[in-house]
Length: 431
Image (cartoon, rainbow, N blue to C red; front, top):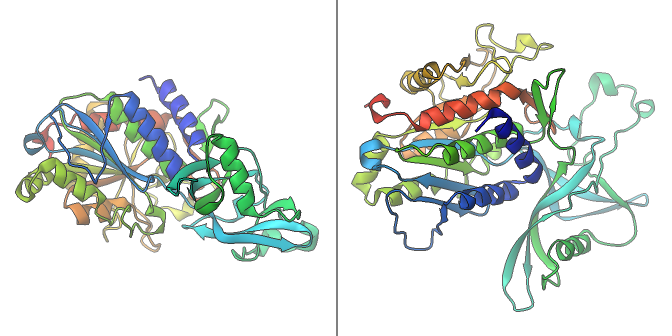
C-alpha cells in the first residue's frame, strides 16, 4: 500500500475513533472486510490452518491473528498497542448548575496535559447501556459528533499570573459548559442522541454510560511541506492503525497477531489491560495445550509499539544528548535498564536487522538518568505471557496533550518495519 494511502487511512481512522470503543469497532469492520472471522471467547473454537480470526473483550480491547503456518514450528510474530488515550471522562451524576449555566462534572483519565483542553470545541462519545422494551440489556456506541461543550479560560485580566504560574484544579476548573440552564438533564440529552443515532431503538432511559470529551478538530497534515501530522490520540491510535494495516497487508506464510489493549494509560491492571489474561488466553487456545503454548511462546516475539518522545527544539535539555529521536527520523527503539521498557539486545537485534534489510532509518531513546521513565504494555505483556519483547515507537511532540504531533514520513517507516517484522523467519528469533 502506498504511503499516501496509509496516511489517508490513518487520518480517517483517527476521525472516526474518538474512544477505545469506536477504535475497536472500526478495526473489527476492517478485519471482517478482509476475511477475518469473529470469535467469541465463550464459544468453542475450531481454528483452521490458513484462516484468520479476531476477538474482543469489553468492546475496547481486541486480538486479531492469522495462521498461515504452524505456530509450533514458526512461532507467532506479535504486534501490541493500546487503544486508550488520556482524556476527560464524564462522571456518573455529572449535572452542575451554576450561575445560569449547565456544566458537566468530569474526571481526568490518565496523565493528561490539562491546559490544552481549554477553549477547544469539544464533543462527547462513548458507550451507553440501556434496557429495551423487551427487558434486554443493550449496549450502543454514541457520538454527538458536533461541538457541544467548551471549557473557557479565565481572562488574563482576572488572572494576571496565568502565563507564569497557572495551576489547573481538576475538580473546579475543568467542568465544561454545555448549555444555558434550561432544566434538561444530561441523561435526557443522551437519550435524545441515542434515538437520533439509532432511530429503531426502543430505549426509554439510559441505565449507564462510559463517555468522554474529545476535540472535534480532525487530525491533519501540517507544515510547509506537510511534514507533520497533528491530531488527537496519536498516542496510541497511530500504532493500532499501522499494526492493523500491517497485519492486513502482509499475507506472508508465518503466523501473525495484533493485540490492542485498553487501560494502558492507567496502569493496565484490568481484565482487558496488558496485565490481564487476554493475550495469554488467546495464545493458549491457539496452542491447544500448556506444553504447546510454551513451545509456541519460545519461538515467538512481540513488538510493543507505542509512541516515543521526540527532541523538542525548545526543550532539548530534557533529553540525553546521545538518545534524542527526531521526527521523521524513523522508528525508535526504547531502552531502560530498570525494565520500564522490555527491549534487550536480542530483540533489538532482530528489529535492527529487519530495518537494515529494508533501508529504514532507526533511532534509540533512553531517558535522562536524572528523570523518571514512563512505561508501556511491553514489560507487562512480557511478564504475563513470557514472550520475548521489544519496545519501539515513532517519535512525537506534545504527548498526552489534547492535540499531538508526529512526523508524516515516520508513518511509512513504521508501516514498512512492522510488515518486515511479520515476515521475519524463525531462524532470526533468538533460541
